[in-house]
Amino acid sequence: MNQSSSAGAPPLARRLMFWVALLYFSEGLPLGLFYDLFPVHMRSAGVGPAEIGLLSLIGLAWTVKFLWAPLVDAWRHHRRWISGANFGMAAVLAALAWHPEALGQGATWPWMLLAAFTMLSATNDIATDGYTIEMLSKGQYGIANGLRIGFYRFGMLTAGFLLVIAGWMGQEGQPNWSSAYLVGALMMVVNGLVILAAPQQPPRVPRVSQPGDVSEWTLLKQQPLWLLALGLVLAGLLWPVLGPVAKALDWAAINAISGAWWFKGAVPVGLMFAGASLMVIAARAPAARKLADGPVVGAWVELLGRHGMLPVLLFILTFKLGDAAMGFMVKPFWVDAGFTPAQIGLVSVNIGLGLSIAGGLAGGWYVDRAGIYKGLWVLGLAQAVSNLGYALAAWYVPHVAPGTDLPLATQLAVYTASGLESFTGGLGTGAFLAFLMGITSKSRATTEYAILSSIFAFSRAVAGWAGGMGVEQMGYASFFFLTFWLSFPAYMLLPAVRRMLSDNGVR
Image (cartoon, rainbow, N blue to C red):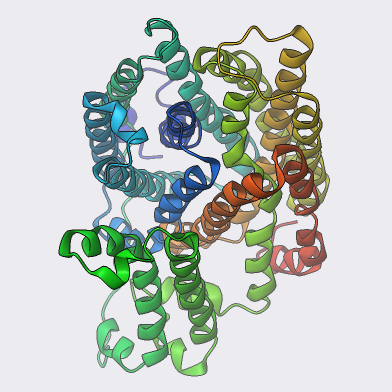
């Protein structure tokens, strides 16, 4: 740590782990709003599960954050990036507070605000992850990830507190969503201000240009496969804009199909998946090694070109597939089971908070002692069990109107499933994030970690989108039971994961 930058700070603030906790609270809060507050608000307003699942696709911003991660890495001053992103997200929440009814009325502008929110959150993630990896040593990964998961979850579960505010401030059984969004905006502003006081990251030694060096763009133009791959990814990212544009310009042919599920979901996902697949192929081509030193795609070439990387990428896509497929439908399930926003918030805060922090700390402790590889398969098995808990709860609990007096047995069933998911989710995520850190090079920490976490975010967004259609077709209980089995394909890839860890000097 830069001692001069922290000499005047209080003793607690001089400790790196304090800032790890604070930074990951700031990173977890936006995701909590996205996965807890927004779906509950939309379901309460009558939006169907399939359309709520489409909300998950907006989370693809977390998938493509590698596109601007090199910009954050090059400009440095990560604290300013984090602070600016928090101020931007506060502005989005303030705008939603101005007219919260629009989320349930089919208007276009709230969806554009939600897209901007995820872009800002993804930028916050890039800067936070890069800052933390640069400041930590490998021997600190376990305890840092324990704190990271605990306070990340604490940030997510703070969205439950905002749900409580919506219920408490409401009248005649109608939640006051404006109050919840305004409090969320205030928290974002406070986060942005406090983070500016974090210690400065160490300066990076600049690379000295050598005679005969060629610009990355010149080399990139000689790699048409890379350009095609980037074009497909960008086309998938921009595809959702086509519907509103066609409506504004009265393009009859597009308007006729723009509401179909495959147009809104399958086409952009397919384009992005095709582009990502081409990137893997392009990175392994011998000619691509010329790009390895470039600031933008160099990290992709170096990372994806490693021996045995393809099965490791598949492992990243599938390790938390079961959790991701179920996760976006949990809060709509609570709404359909009759829980009010205030009750949902109390469940998250009172039960989930302590158990998720305990799971994250326990997972970090176990990984430090047993190693990352053993932690992945042992703790990953534990996290799969939580899906069965929700499947049993969904099978037992009937659908009733929100605000109905719920029997004690119904409340206990949902609360128990929530507690089990929070604790075991913390266990599995602790091992998973330690694994991502363990295979990341410190020389390109920000960009490489953004790439790896983007791959994981892609599976989470697609699984959430598919989850909405799965619930509409199968019902909550059957779909939650199916997600339990989606947790196991990753286990076939563990031998490749072990080799990658060994190559990086990590057990």
